[in-house]
Image 1 (cartoon, rainbow, N blue to C red):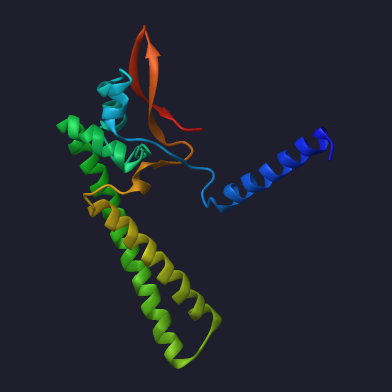
Image 2 (image 1 turned 90 degrees about the horizontal axis):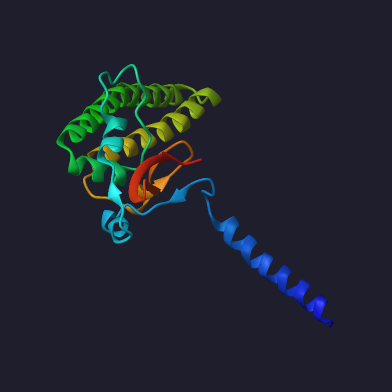
Length: 182
């Protein structure tokens, strides 16, 4: 084999292994971040607490949407500022208050469909049981995440339009600021 052919062959075999790795990734549109503040400090970064606090300190929890950020980032910022901790707690309480009626509605949907299936098997009743059960499982997962106090690796995952801590140089100083992930 000539040298060019060998290089092309090596490139293609490397590409095959790359494709296998990327195809195995279930969520290629998200990113994993590091939420360990000490690692940022090693690089000389200072947390801009006022910028982070401005994300969560709002007057009304109904009119505005909750800023999307990983739970690990919320825990870090709320541990440094009691006002932010109270604000995040209020956001969580508002979301739990919205989820609980939806959970009741989905459980009722499943129960009604199961009663209907006892008398007559219909496609709609089967679909209601399947969809309602999936939604109940999803809502229960969300509610468990609100109650959970320990961080898991998934709490450091960010998605498009979510805020993440970014180390930037500003006026010759390194600072950690919230920026949206694109």
